[in-house]
Length: 136
Ligand code: 5GP
Ligand code: ZN
Image (cartoon, rainbow, N blue to C red; front, side, top):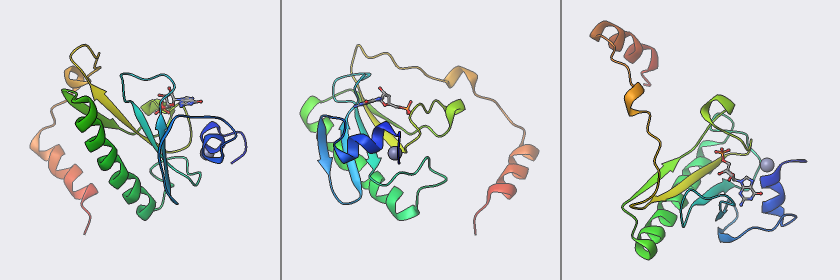
């Protein structure tokens, strides 16, 4: 897609530090990493977010995210690995080309948690939501 930074990286128009590529997926170092080994896993095709991307493509992105996470763990031995994927500006998405973040968490890595902002719904509300979201 024109004017998409990540499409330009996939096409080689903008340089990147690539760690993996196949027919479907492209993975490279985040230019502004949270920590050493912060990798972005993209679909080569331009899809904006999880709602647009085909299931098979997303499944392959997830598979390669697992492989890259294993590699990061083997090489850098972080204390944890945060995997996240933002959809929409309000969810923190800045680049509107789907990508999964692999963020190694070391002793000194700042982790921003929403744990203190979680809610508690009563059983009636939980049941209603369960019904609304249940997939056959
Ligand atoms: P988002 O907030 O959309 O989930 O994440 C976008 C990520 O892309 C950010 O972590 C940002 O540092 C990274 N990023 C933005 N522009 C570039 C770029 O030109 N090259 C690389 N390698 N990463 C980028
Ligand atoms: Zn794109």
